[in-house]
Length: 507
Ligand code: MCA
Ligand code: AMP
Image (cartoon, protein in one colour):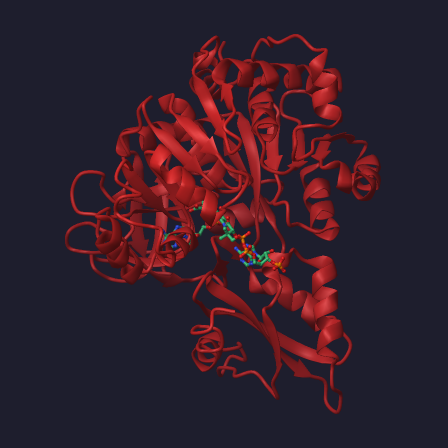
């Protein structure tokens, strides 16, 4: 028996003294050193009672040790559940409880707050700080530097990633070893990754993009990464000449274009720029090519499906499209009302099927059945069409979702908080254009008759329960919300009405 994900990502690099991570301070973590850290951590996990299939929830800053924790989980057959570092205690409590995590790994600063949550569940707690210190690494020091990988099949779970829903309740997307591995192998081929590549990695590692796309692809190909804690424009400009590939959300590319130091010369050694997680404006694509001579390769994916489509490496990378379905991924456009497949060229909902598609939502069979059809097609909630040349275009969303700087924000989650506040009758949260983040959050609040809600207090309530990136940039009092004859709030009208609130200023 083997552990296919471990073997293909990590095991095959055992003993290699070649660089895996190049850090901002100039130091290097070799494959071998990385794997030893991971093996030691795997011993800590198992000695703390973690069994294959148990969930480990981690809210930790990006560091080589945080990445080694992912490798340790894969090796020990533990389901890795990475969490956004911006989440508040309310949000974390839900994820930890819902997943039934048996271990919580957090920064020492959050330990006091999270300890009671872990204790209630009977889960162990370990700390791991941004500088790699903490109880986890301290205990790891005295452990053996080798760990025999726990046998797994491709159908076994490797990770849970929570994704919010239109009801405001987050769902744990269950991703198998096979989901992650098949997608990484495909992307290595499609994007021509080799051992010579150096990926400039400035994405967070708690999402599909930074963890599974960027990291898994690098590992399968045996490439290395310049591993930055976060997107920092000055560092990117400094390090671009040392890289061959970059992956980013559109905000990365618009920020680079806004800087005069970002020139053709600076990017002359680059092989490839890849964009995803949010729509890349055709205008950005064109400007980027004019400035650097590179055409950004745009691809399309989801937490539940990994990557679905990609523009071609060779051949035309068409602005405003997300390219073709990846090998092994079937994509169809259906009528949202009937589920019938629509003729080529017509707009409908995008559905996908393939080895990349997740196993379902953790302990939510009804939600799973609503989105994952019996024939294996997953209803993405995105609206699109396929043009005459086969390129997929995303033209909108059939789900109430805002994407800000690549982070997904579900309006319902914010509306639920707003509606509970004193003096508030109801609310509508919408995404409006924003120069830096693509879209940003605007909250429209309807007061109860004769009352005037204190908007500062309302904002304070949002602040204490929801992560910073979900906070409305502004709250506006309105007399009423536009509704259709069925009584449904017409957000399209609101989006039009407030489209210019932040567009120009970008504040
Ligand atoms: C930070 N802030 C944000 C965001 N990021 N607010 C809204 N949306 C955001 N995305 C807050 C900060 O807390 C800060 O608040 C203020 O906005 C300004 O911060 P700034 O320094 O400008 O932001 P930053 O730290 O530079 O971050 C912006 C960023 C970052 C680099 C675009 O958000 C980022 O790395 N985004 C990538 C997200 C990602 O990886 N998405 C993939 C998931 P204050 O000033 O009050 O402190 S989707 C996915 O995986 C699917 C499958 C896919 O297809 O890829
Ligand atoms: P998430 O659920 O966080 O994984 O986000 C997935 C969603 O991001 C998709 O359903 C799309 O709405 C959006 N998305 C990802 N890549 C692209 C892209 N290249 N263009 C437009 N939307 C995208």
